[in-house]
Image (cartoon, rainbow, N blue to C red; front, side):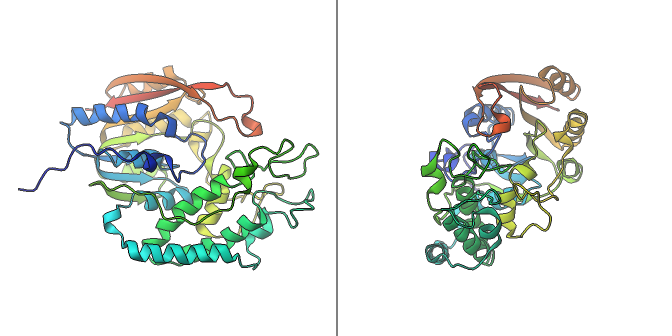
Length: 373
């Protein structure tokens, strides 16, 4: 008789804290709170490992968390960077040729250290022409060195055979989201008081992070008996086509700030595609993904459709008090589909960019646990 897999395997702390992308709505600080809902679902299912869907996977940190309790982690997101991240960090170490991974890591690291001077589009479009004489026309997302590293390493990583392209793209995207002249979103870069790009802005904040060189590292991984599946469908489409799972986790966009434009740079790096049409100031491509969840008039209808159609007995929804859908409206909608438990927790907000500076210092996160029966 085959040995039953343990229902829970505690992941190392590094797996849930390292090599994450800097991300609005990143649930890293809320993982114990969310995991308590997953533990309740697992108890209802008889304390066995369960098939789990992360419908809006984003940074992938909740998908990583799911590995501790899952037999299947199904991570879905429209954005290319999210797909690359999930293909990387949901991999099991036992399935990887580590000698080959070390060889590819060393080769890409050597390429980063050489910093070829060819004119890649990140160096040309998203770093200043001359760091000592930054002009008002310059975009100042990256240092010249880091832009050159991205221009050299991103296409070289993409050219690697599977699974090594994914395994090295994940850490590269994490580094590209940290060592950048922003507070975490790519809608704009730090500027001086006159409006010209400047590393760290007028106060020269966070220079050690911004100016630190991007390094090539192998991924931090976690072994667990969980199959990984990564898809890139609109949530409204996937829920109509999917096979059943035990538990679906929904963390939809909750306001008007779209991830496709806020994190366009990570898509550009993951695809290594120069934008053909881009905004004048920040260079944001005009073809970013739009979502009904980013509009107050359609957010509730879109989420209602997903809850009704998703083929899962248990649905866990994470949503905060700043969202378009009020907690009372969310509760009323979910109670139509089964029995509901609601918990909430206060946590500090992200206020790093100019358009978010007026946010309250804290926000309340709600976790809705629905049993559809």
